[in-house]
Structures are given as structure tokens and as C-alpha cells.
Amino acid sequence: MPKRHLTAVFVGSAKPAPGAAQTDYFDTALPAFGLRAGKRRKTWFCMVRVLRAGTWRLTRISLGTTADLTLAEARQAARVAIEQAQQGNDPSDTRKRRREALEARSRDTFAAVRADFLARYVGRRTKRRPSERTMTELRRALSADVLKDWDARPIAEIDEHDIRVALDLLVARGAPVRANRLLGYLRTFFTWARSQRKIEVNPATDIDRPGAEQSRDRVLSLDELAAIWRATDPADVFGGIVRMLMLTGQRRAEVAGMAWDEIDGDTWTLPAERSKNRRPHMVPLSAPAREIIEKRAGRDRRYVFPSQHGKAYTGFCFGKARLDARAPLAAPWTLHDLRRSFVTHCAERLRIAPHVIEAVVNHQSGVRSGVAGIYNRASYLDERRAALNAWADFLLRIVGEADNAREPRA
Image 1 (cartoon, rainbow, N blue to C red):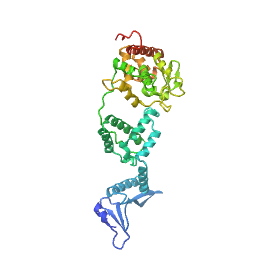
Image 2 (image 1 turned 30 degrees about the vertical axis):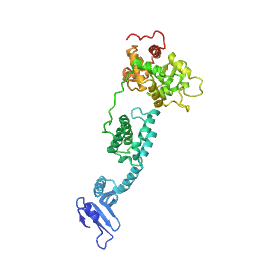
Image 3 (image 1 turned 90 degrees about the vertical axis):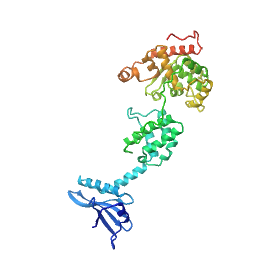
Image 4 (image 1 turned 180 degrees about the vertical axis):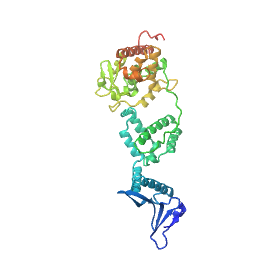
């Protein structure tokens, strides 16, 4: 059998010997490896001794055609087959396994793996399904228009360059914060895909955040809080939500999703499935808060603050735009700033103890984190009620809706 140093040029021009249907050419660089040149196709192979039924037998292993593998890929496949045979394993199904891997790779498109991820994902640390709000954000981010060209591509082909291109598109649109969020979601997604053996490397790991962000430390002044309060109408759904945010310090989605069956007298109990830390949370309601809720009573709907379709209110962008027009503050602000302002003013102006404030806003951090957060199960319900009543009195004095409109001593 002829021996040749197999090169890409030779492989391209190789033909059967005159009068032969096919000819085997063994590689001088890797003697067990060779090329079978036929009239219609060319096939890579290697000769190895395979252990079968206690006997070593010289066996020809087909590695694939020149249309399937390049010379370098075929030579590497031959090395793997030789190593497997030397270890007593039968490499005869190498080609079959590679075809199965290619088929699986083709099936594991970005769209297919994304659908699997959204259906099955649970947090690595919590081992629990994220909240519906988080899943909605993941679903929205991973379906972004800047990723639309990925849907039909095998996920294993998506690399760092592809991610950078998508992020740069968002930055070019003037949405650097959205680009940062997308990067975070992609890291989560690819980490999960790697854990499911869909990919070998997370392509988002070494990418820095593309956009600069300002620290979320906006605390609204008392004058700003008064301006916002006066610009809201508690009879309006959005206005009622804003005032409840100011009075209770709870999260936006929690207040917007408040259901009538969560209200019992002067206490609102947030169920575990709607709580960020997945624990039931009791919110004592001050008199002004109860008044807002009572004004919305008598409506035959599930939610205290429903949308036009009877579901929990979600029109925050529209409502906030109208509120900004009625109460234009000197600097931009968000609804979450109301929660931060509540915490800050309760601590600095009312001298409410930090552990009570954290209990009010359902934080599991700071003085209630770590061992303290695990073993200190005290609810501080009386202290929370006193804190929220004190804050409501203070806020009403600030906005001029209570007697003795003066600020307590700092």
C-alpha cells in the first residue's frame, strides 16, 4: 500500500491507482492513519488493534469522508481512536458518536435551549424557581431584537464576539443600562446551558459591562416627597399606588399586586409567592393607608389596584410620565426611590431602630443577615406598627394634611 505525507494539496488531487476502484494512502506522519481515495468519494480511516473477546484484532476504523472532516480534524480523530484502542476500548463507533454529537449540536439551537431554560431554570443557590417577575424579565431579555439572528444557530457556535456585537447595538441606541442587564441575563443563561452540557465554555464570562451606571442612591428630600404626594390622587389607581409606596415602604410590584384577600383589618399580609425572599410578610396599615384602601372598596375585582382588564396594575411608565408632568422635580427619580427615602428618613429623622426598619421593608440584610437572619425570627410586629404609624403622622405633617405641621427634631 502506498505511503504519502498527507497534505491538503495531495488530498485534493488524490485518485485511485490506474485500474483500481480505490486506493489506500497511509500517512507517513501518523502511520496508522490513511486516506482511501475512490472514484466518487474519499474516506479517512485508521488501522488499530482492538480487544474483542479476549483477542487483539487488527481493525479498520472509518473516521468519515473528506466532506465531513478536514485533514487536521481527521488526523486528530485518528489519534483519539488509537488512544482508545490502546486503552482496551473499541473505537469502531467513533464516527457514529460524532454524527450523533453533530445532530445534537444542530438541535440545540439558541431558541431551543432558551425555551428549555425558561421552563426548567432554578437558582443555583436557592434551588428554587425565581419569581414570575424575574422570569418575565429573563424571557424579555433573551428574546430581545438584538439576539433575533441567534434563534436558529446552534448555541455552541455563539461566541464572545456575537455577544459583544449585541451589547454594542444597545449601547449605540443609548441604552447602556439595558445592555448591562442583558449581559447579566446572558451570563445566567449560558452558565445554565454549560451545566446541562449544551456548551463547554460560557462565552459571556470575560465580558465587562458595556455601560456606565450611576449608583442607585437617590433619596428624595422632604420637599420632593411633599410635591409628589400633592400631585397624586388617591382615587386614581396609579395615584393610590404611589401613596401606598410612600406610606408603607414596600416594593412597587408588591403594592400593585395587592389583592383583597390579603387585607385583614389593619394588616396586609404579603404571601410567600409574592415576596422577594419567599417568606410571608405582614405590613401593619396606618390610618392613611387604610383610608386609601377603603376608598377602593366595593369594586368587584380581585385586586385593590387593578388595570383596566381587571389584572394587577402594570402601567407604571404611563403613570409615572403623567406624574412627572404634574410634579417636575429638579432631578430624575424612580418609584424605587420612594422605598429608599422611606428607609433613610425613618432612620435619620424618626430614629427608628435599623432592625425594625428592615423588618418593615422585609429586608434580609444588614443587621438581620447571616446568623442573625437565620436564628432571629422575632417579627417585631408591634414595633413595625408603631414605626409605620409614626412615619404616616410625620409624612402628613410634611405635606400639610395634619395639624402641628412641624418637623420632629433631628
